[in-house]
Image 1 (tube, one colour):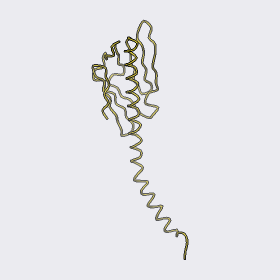
Image 2 (cartoon, one colour; image 1 turned 120 degrees about the vertical axis):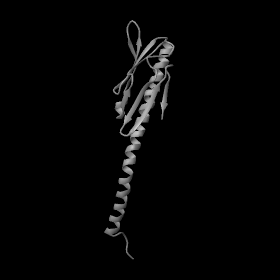
Image 3 (cartoon, helix red, strand yellow; image 1 turned 45 degrees about the vertical axis):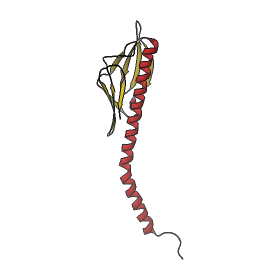
Image 4 (cartoon, one colour; image 1 turned 90 degrees about the vertical axis):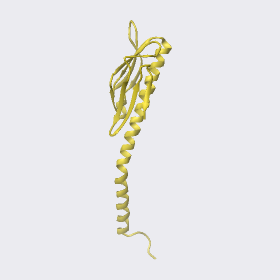
Amino acid sequence: MRRGYTLIELLAILAILGTLFALALPRTVNWRDRLAARRAAAEVRAFYARARYGALARSARVRIELSSDSLVAVLEGAVDSVFLHRPGPRYLGVELEASRPVVRMDPGGFGWGAANTKLILRRGSAAESLTVSRMGRIKWWP
């Protein structure tokens, strides 16, 4: 009785595994791009909501500056002061495109110059879209 495998059998198994891996790799890359874009969209949405609630809580105008490198919320007054600052989605490898990179909120949380502001977050072939309404609310289009 013979024990073990022949070289031909091992090479056949390696060829099958290599083929399966080659088929699965592009899907894995697309999957990682989708996850990164979704995570970035969730982070931008959460940042926007915190800045909006900051305007409501402080009864002050807030300027939200959105870029790939950083997300900044500034209290506007006699002297502007940054009260929220986060790294932008670029740290996840995601690019942010904004139709208006600066959005302002009045003390009631309503957007000024925010009507239909579109934010697109892209990584590879994956993209997520956020839209800011006239009322200052943000909508995620998954």
